[in-house]
Image 1 (tube, one colour):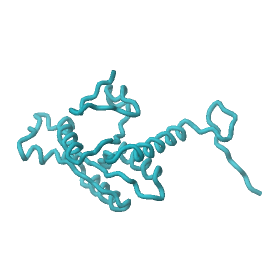
Image 2: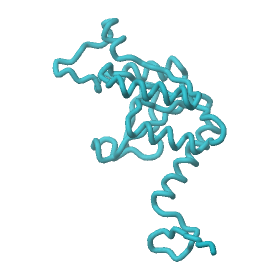
Image 3: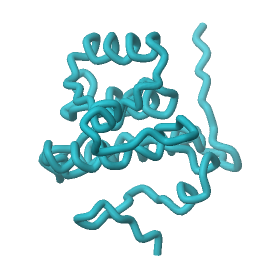
Image 4: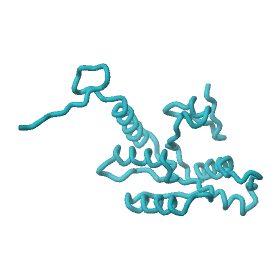
Amino acid sequence: MTTTVATRAEGTDSPYALSHLDALESEAVHIFREVAGEFERPVILFSGGKDSILMLHLALKAFAPAPVPFSLLHVDTGHNFPEVLDYRDRTVERHGLRLHVASVQDYIDRGVLKERADGTRNPLQTLPLTETIQAEKFDAVFGGGRRDEEKARAKERVFSLRDEFSQWDPR
């Protein structure tokens, strides 16, 4: 005897309807594939944190069994736990990915950026990020961020179009 279990989306009677989470995943996979077809040098922001791990998981799913056709880019603040960097490097190796690292510390050492009095380096990531995007000629950048973490992110949508100075106008 076999038992068939069909997951039904809330509010539907169809056994083929997707749950909300499955629909979001399907949309993300579709977007990864569309970007692969439309852009020459996409990149995925990858720090080894929860948001970027999810983005990589979705990219792996979108292209399986083929390799992900994008590089990864980590803007390293220099304040990462060694375990996170080890995880990042093991993940890159396990999946045969290419990793670019833009180091905030390199910019501080060269005198391009100044260490902040409060010690935080997150605001210092912008210049290394934008310069690496330009230097590597990345033409699409995937990033994962939750809208509840910051008010500006709540205005972001699927695509965040930027001008040549990396400025975003939410209107």
